[in-house]
Length: 272
Length: 348
Ligand SMILES: Nc1ncnc2c1ncn2[C@@H]1O[C@H](COP(=O)(O)OP(=O)(O)OP(=O)(O)O)[C@@H](O)[C@H]1O
Ligand SMILES: [Mg+2]
Image (cartoon, rainbow over all chains, first blue to last red; front, side):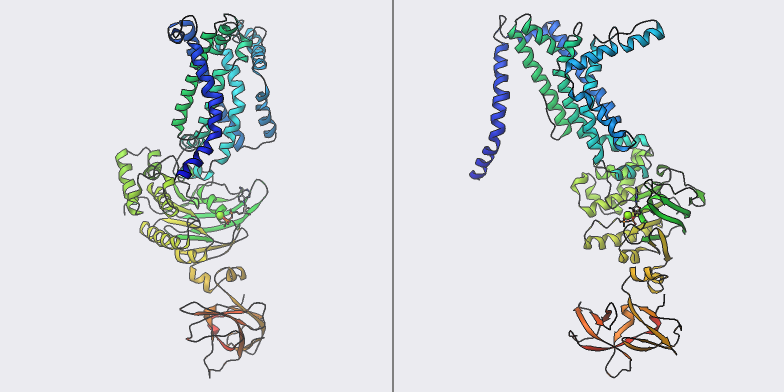
């Protein structure tokens, strides 16, 4: 018995050291720095009471949630379709869809501007059609578009891998019992893909919460936490506030992922 | 029994199947299955049993020109969800996100059956399959045999017009296979439902089938009652595929078949017979003093308890197989005299 315990401790050691060095210690440090500013621990309260901070927290979580939902819907449908239907050019299309994986956030932001910016394609088309120029690159909508764009590749590959493992006999059984294609999707395909949706969704959410480059490129009216942290840190030199915001951002993301994981009842890659 | 729907007659007309990759799985098939009949598709792997079943189910369409008729009505292009046929797969195909009861009630819920009626029917099915205790289990908490019972209950719960089973017992161990086979047999008879049962196990086919469709390379080799198929096989393939067949080559002259084992008086012998086939039960070791012109040497003897299986060398490519019930030992290399019942002789 004692031997067994010793073995377990030994096996846990690497993970434990890693966890302590790269998570526990920095987080604790961050937590205390957050309380060390001019206002002391009130910095944490300010996140909830100061409208500037609070609204940025809410919009960060909002845009991350919207990104996750939109990405899952798009990659769910596209992923299953691409896995099921092998047509000429299928491989090239999949490769193309995974293209944005390599782009830094700045490039994504630049692409959003090219599409929906003042000189963008959408602006030109809408001007020609309605006489009014539609420009949304520099708003939350632009950010949302950029995030969806770079989240799709990560998600679609996970969905395709999971779709390949779905048992076609389950769908045939459901159909033999009278299920329409819509019911088959609802009762067989979506439940079958649920673990993939949850793990891909968690990564998608966490990435969208912490992404900085895209927001930085689009700049202007966008008020998301990573941007606020950046301004507090560099422009206002308010290191304590930046630390408090970072700490809360970390905790909230961790909480959301933990909830997702319990909902899944299985292991989910919690990327931060 | 509360099965309302009346059994279905199924007919295939000119149903061929060529897959997209060019594989010709079925040559044009024609046959009819009577209402309430249990038909077994039997044949070696890859002969097209599953493909035929899937065409009947509506999971595949036959090549142009083929027709599937349900009670005379053309359903060739009707998708499976509108055919009302129950399916049971070798891999069970139970929904892992539902309980046992959830699985069994699924088809009824799809049909918007009132909750109380679903519950009652599920309870009835659980009872019929003797799995009432398992109602609230998750699927991964069941053994293979239990899973297949759930799959059967799920397929029957909606009162399908026909039940299609694709090797339902192949994944189970021998003992369980026997029990479940008996239960399926009882079930099919009590429901009186039209059933098609795919297997490559001939014992299963013999036990369950009212009729057997023996298939070979995408063709029907023979259709008939189990006894006909066994005793009057239509082709060499059927004769060799079903049961054990002995073979002797030689020549026929004046009602006597002469071969390397000796001579066999055979009154009705066709003059052209150069090869005769017969089952192990139609040949025996002759009693001492009995007159016979055939003999061989024992190559191997296996005592099986109720009988001894003998392999007797007679100078043919394969030794003869003989099932002896004699209460005596046989030793390797022993010379034995043989007697054949001419009524069991086949010429194909
Ligand atoms: N989707 C498909 N595409 C191409 N060829 C196929 C497809 N399905 C089956 N085949 C081929 O058709 C032939 C008949 O297959 P089928 O599954 O009907 O055989 P089976 O008699 O059920 O065999 P088994 O006993 O192994 O299940 C085989 O040669 C098989 O390789
Ligand atoms: Mg098969």
